[in-house]
Image 1 (spheres, rainbow, N blue to C red):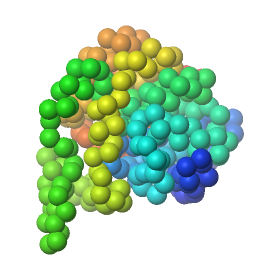
Image 2 (image 1 turned 90 degrees about the vertical axis):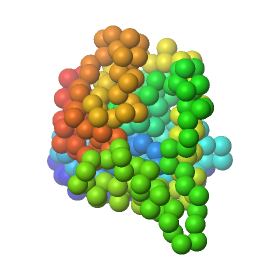
Image 3 (image 1 turned 180 degrees about the vertical axis):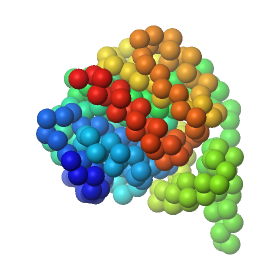
Image 4 (image 1 turned 120 degrees about the horizontal axis):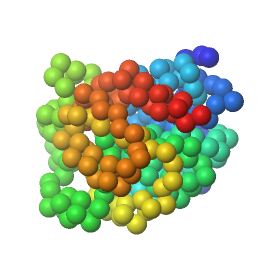
Length: 267
């Protein structure tokens, strides 16, 4: 099985969606990977060949991020619908769906609206967006937004906003984040607003897929939600990885190993 990474576009209702994939195998259900805000498929650049050595792995640029065209009305529901259209376009009728942070929220919506298409669900550092979550987020400052400046100091401000949540000595991870944030074209908060307004409690009951919760022990945003997920899905498996906000690219080997172990146990 090849680990050559290939990138492509697919035509969907609102324009074009971009994705990267690795591996092949018509007899194995593929693994679809959804990124956090405001990242792109590149969050999984190191994960793709590791999973691709054993399975077909597909990392999607969410609509409006990376190289994918934006939808007219951005939001979790619209992003989930666009991802499903991309899978239709490339002939994927059923997949194991993996999401990190915002990608996990999109994955929940996919599993709720198209349960027959989700073989299993992996939620990595995913918040449970209840009424209490929405209320708490309403009083918090913007996560990534910075005011543009003529001298470019806003670029340093964007770096500095994220730096406390990234591991020391891994400058390349912050560089990748800033590069993806700049591709969004200004509104780097769109994904965070979408998460903050998503009424997950109205959708979670429709999720039927076997569930793995990937718990990043050093992630201050998502780690506190582990108890809620355990309560909602007592049969779910949990994989704890010593990592933070950029878990898939910070701990690619551990992340890929956890996903593969869970997915292959579903067969």
